[in-house]
Image (cartoon, rainbow, N blue to C red; front, side, top):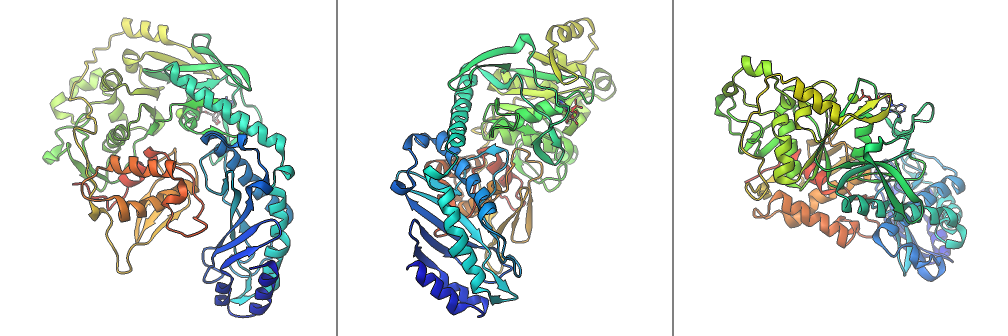
Length: 569
Ligand code: ADP
Ligand code: MG
């Protein structure tokens, strides 16, 4: 249909009941682009309507070298998404009305550059996916206001955002170059067997506890200790220097408030690339780094925590340990075993968020409470074995227990936000002050092959009206009346990732769970599907697939493992 027909339609339904908006569903050819109205909301308070605008590749005219690798494409999509968002702000004045009336938006982007599906760019087309709150007064259609959106604002937004000649080409180029540098940096730390790299000059502290924006006033720029300084040549930035943390067991020590947690948090989010101006553009870590916390009250379903915890009172099983309400130590043990199940090669642990009895049992306590009476083998006695037997490195923030000096390969001391190498001194102290602590042993941490956790179809019970899965913000998904609580998955950082996990639950329920495959195999499979076929593949929607960003395997598994209906054979 043509633009004129859209205008006619809007005139015709003006003033009618909201349901008449359903007539809009369809495709409309504008002079430069094709508008698809894929989904029309049922009333002004419901989830907004979903539309797409598509410009043919030869008209949009983006040089293909801007998106000829996955990482460049990710950067180009990020750029175009942000460009659309800013042009919506520029060309569209919110028309208002009841409920979500007048909303016009594209998925939002934060400090990280994630794999997203808000825009599609390839040889054939550039397509942006938008959400619209079709305007109404009460439940009466406001046809003229709908025209303000579709007929006056939309063409200007498309014009300014999806044509190469109209976008900020220099910015786009810089963005792609940064992505290329970050790609090389990641390759390079892998080649050099480093688990993390923090460039000199990085700005790590954040504005506040609830903001991911950089601290602007009084931030002390990062400077590597000479002992850990490495130089990496990047294609666009040129040589860059910074702290390379080798594989093994690394302690970050130092007094309170000296910046230990801030450094660990930056490493934790170094699994993602950050946008220019963030301060962490050249902070990267192993993409399999997993933050491990104590997480009281979480549910655990048949996880082998026996390498850490044995002989619980009442003869509770710890080889197939299940609980609706884990303690600090059992949750931390389960978090580690689950991380290994999805092949984590770097564990990140902060004493601030750990269970003390899980981390350490000192010499005096060993004398008072015999090993036979203590179910927990503390992490201090497992951390080396994890590295030596399974190649799993650990970075630990620890200000309270020098016992860890014995098991560390590297000790970095934060001193007024400046890291210093304290390895030799710590080793010397450890040698001279033996505090009669004895190493405690237990069986090694099992790999997933030893204890396969087969996912049962019964994990997805149906309610009277079937199954309704609804993501709520970043850290919650509701499954019928059950909440999946994700607050402690700190590396899940974007609500669009949570949207994707919501769809993945559905996809797993409908297509993958077969009472044969393990949870880890299912997570591998759905992750590969999302990578190879694209995020749209996991969406149940026609046309506009919903706003999605790719989560890692660890967060997908993390969500399943926290699902209180999870049922393992
Ligand atoms: P620790 O874990 O050692 O107790 P934190 O990392 O929590 O310390 O940091 C304490 C405070 O110092 C926080 O408010 C943090 O934002 C701030 N901070 C951390 N690193 C820097 C830095 N490089 N420059 C300025 N302030 C910083
Ligand atoms: Mg701290």
